[in-house]
Image 1 (spheres, helix red, strand yellow):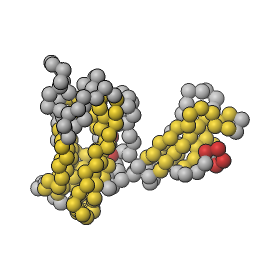
Image 2 (cartoon, one colour):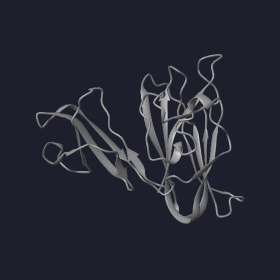
Image 3 (cartoon, one colour):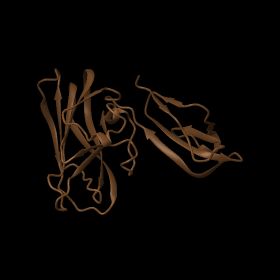
Image 4 (cartoon, helix red, strand yellow):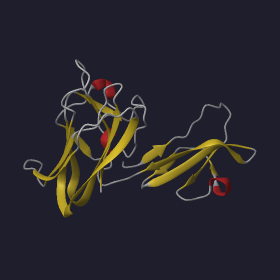
Length: 220
């Protein structure tokens, strides 16, 4: 239904959670959380446990970004590993981003296999940019894609390549998140978008596979 129902919880059994939306001041304008927050457009949420009418601890901050592919149909040309399915068929277009913990339920993973998906926007739509969210954590063999391609089609059969992005492998001791932005020709009109992400062809460590982890494909 293209609506996100946001539920707030914390580890304390008796809680007073309060929140604000977008640029509101948490200390002055916080609203007590009682029921799930219904979101229908891009929204920034800031929330905290309150004690004696004052925020306690580090606040939770999250931006939920709605975009043109939100909740649209995704067809997988290459299937992710079942263990890392995220939230299922809407994972790549649900507006919810993954953390640096690849077990958090927001990531889909491909093992030694390229990702290729087709998104149906349901009608002809003008698009300007595709953003692919990815993770790199080389310790457990998770690497950024080495190439991303975007194709468009009006009928879902004949696809035209619009843009290609390439990056070289770099050793990285950290766990990092990246958004790879691909800007399309001005006012590209399409209904179907095919996104291809190439896995690192060979693990620098011998006899080990290579993981590709993607959490969202943002269409603007």
